Image 1 (cartoon, protein in one colour):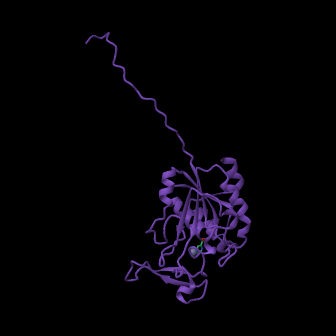
Image 2 (cartoon, helix red, strand yellow):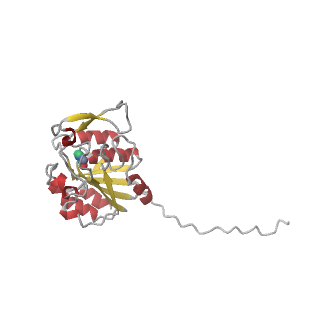
Image 3 (cartoon, rainbow, N blue to C red):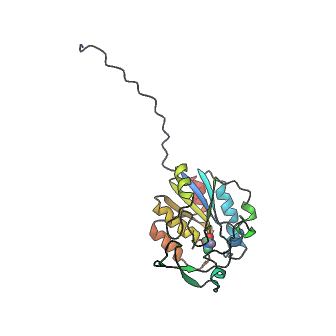
Length: 234
Ligand code: VGL
Ligand code: ZN
């Protein structure tokens, strides 16, 4: 080999990688008849319907909706325990035979029973084709507020997988109720490693006069935004 010999030509294939560090996904929480006008109606919930519709029309990478979807004898219903609504009771995970780890469960009116009209999306949203539908609270003895997993953190819904497949970086939450399913979902979203946003003017809460839920989310690292800001960013 002489020093004048040309070096081997190394064939470098063309690389085409899309570099995206902002992949926004919208998660619409529980926009169901029972939470808007039915047995567990959230104050002023009707007002967010047009806002939520507007968000769904924005160019998110994915639009996902959740539904609270309980069996008739669900553990969260006051009727199941023959107790008064809005009181609390200590409940256990069905696998916890010693009943060692009890948590306090709020007892709700019967709501969002699977396949009933109360569990259906509000009429204004029922014809929308979401990229994924997530059902939660389907097991009779397990409560699930978060769109990601049950209150015990044991059973996951399909949402973690869907978000991974989409490659989402930023999750935007809207819907009902701000102090329950939206709060638990947004806090879990931070735990799952997402940049997490709650669109405040597209959310209403059961305890609408309290700021406790907002404070709790903020402490966790959830960020707040509104319809206009999201529209300008997307
Ligand atoms: C919810 C109470 C009971 C909610 C669900 O969607 O926020 N709240 N079940
Ligand atoms: Zn419920």
